[in-house]
Image (cartoon, rainbow over all chains, first blue to last red; front, side, top):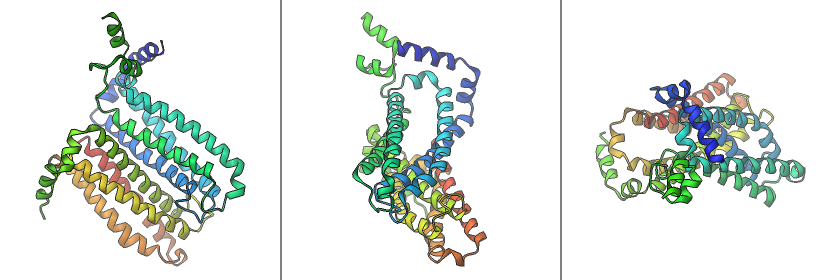
Length: 193
Length: 158
């Protein structure tokens, strides 16, 4: 049901002029993707500085709260630009992206990363006054920072693998992959065999 | 100096055997390339934005800059090692790609600028350096590394 709805939405977007214009433009798609990668560098770069401090691996002579608070704004600017360009990239190729297994895993990882970020922030705000100047933060903070880095590394690799056609719907794949990728027509053909 | 023999060797090396045959390995190494670039970018931005008085104004710029050096080098090493592996998959194509050489030139300028200009100059108390010079250095640094990243992405489109 969800797969059918997502595919209908993707086909609706695919029928829009804007989608075709971005996709078929000589330079626009390349510029959007380049901006996406550059803003990823801003967002992830700031995130790395914060997480490395929370792991006790960098900026250990600077208060953890100072790093987290002062770099929050540039990190969020990077995130907003990354999301805008990411939505435009999706809008340019909606059907294939909707049915990309890697894109789906990427979205799930982003959700996990967001949940981890909110939980991490809450844990940090609740306890930072007791360890703010410690070179190495407590274990639960380090675990949250490590999870953040691993989740975003997963987002990067799945984002990159969207370009590969290993699990595209037009290929002969197991039913489970068709289901996970949302290959609605192929699942129907599989069922009718 | 013609580097063709190196690219020719790389094209038939064991690295090329792996990078051409295993797309999954290539993608994971590409992840490390992007993560290395992000670490490097983060350190450059935090340091340069501090010099521009945009972030962390309540922390002395010497402390901020000093903390970025080690991870800048780690990011750079990660980028270079993973970059050689990625290049092996299409080494001869890259040899004839102008954007690749634009990136390599920008990278060489960036490395020289960081280790021969920015780092030695910022190793003294920043109070003794003209504010205008600090800001010029920060803007130059951002511009160089922006060029490295942008030209690197553009290789794929050229």
